[in-house]
Length: 121
Length: 110
Image (tube, rainbow over all chains, first blue to last red):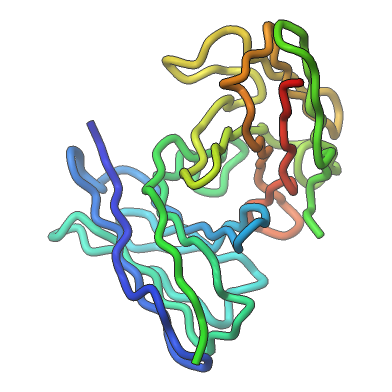
């Protein structure tokens, strides 16, 4: 079955850029939307943004100025970049398959296990 | 401060029923479909309900979903100790042009 796996550094310094990759196995990224979400320790979920397999993107307005999501169909993976990091960006970052892509029917049917990213000097 | 409002916690005895409310507005729940996610400590969220009331394969019919106006409800009947988890509602917000979630509800089985 389709599985998602996040990878990237667990510790990033303030003001630097976070780079994470989500590798999709057991299926193709084609024909789907793919999202990044995060969850600060002990807090709720926050949607970061999504990328369609064609490369088109939509971002959370509150993060739009700092975020970039890209698609690599040849490697069956997609990536997140978040710049100007502060301690408030410390969270578990999840990648997920996004069914709806911003439509009325928006939801996530598959999730990665998540990766904890700590922003600290 | 989450866009969607959920009670922080609900509880009931084994075998009983609990309901979790998710309140929004016309820009989100009022005009879009709601999904629900179950999250156990230390694990990723899992899709529990989509399109307001549809259950993915493998989700028991003890779980139900509904929507009325700008609010949605998740119901759990025949409560089991294995249902102790955090539950989140989510939907698209047309005004914000982004996805939004509730703050989460912790279900405790007494």
